[in-house]
Length: 272
Ligand SMILES: C[S@@+](CC[C@H](N)C(=O)[O-])C[C@H]1O[C@@H](n2cnc3c(N)ncnc32)[C@H](O)[C@@H]1O
Image 1 (tube, rainbow, N blue to C red):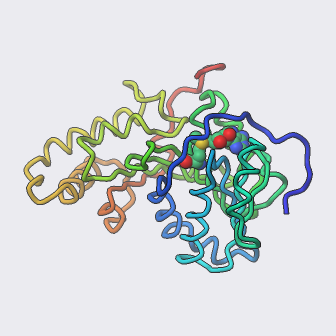
Image 2: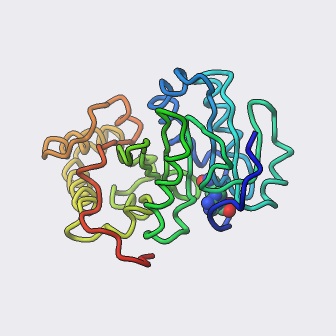
């Protein structure tokens, strides 16, 4: 159980959430981070900042229990005590519990932390500190998945981090409703959302995806998946180090290592 520590680190922000909003990142976690969880002596997972309803924590637990290991323990941490009280009705101990906590993770040492749509409402200048604090709280070999999505989870992006820092960026979209990859720019993680400007790699990547999507218009009659597969392959052929996982590209995703996409200039102090 969480230790009774000092004040949780962070601030209460809007609690917007929705059922199934985080299914894309959850399915990616099951596929990509499952091994770390399977190998852990204590399969403890924290969902940080679950919002006004605990629904996405309930879903995360169900997906991990079904897809990775049934004895997973998921703790939903929220900085708003009112939201912690509301969530208690959904608790199902020991596999699913709720407690008050912030970036200090209430003293827990989870092997995996999911923090979605939390940093979005902070300043860009606060991201590095939040990442450092969260990764310092992980169990050895643990992972942090920090990202953003739209209200229904049709456009999403996330950064995977470990104790050494950011490892990768993933962009994910529901292809049947996406008009063009440029839409993903609105749902970038906080570390990148203000960097969609000329001279920054994320701007160049989104440009490249958009151009390749237009060039692949001839595949549209075969469906958006075919068009996306050709888009990703074309961007990769240009030299973008997109990880070679066509199995996941088919789902409307792509993942790149972090270094080539990291912001080129440091965050100015006080940047929003
Ligand atoms: C927009 S909701 C996100 C809900 C859910 N994760 C989702 O994506 O649907 C953000 C929540 O994060 C909480 N929050 C913000 N900073 C936090 C922190 N440092 N620690 C824990 N919760 C935090 C807010 O109080 C709010 O309820």
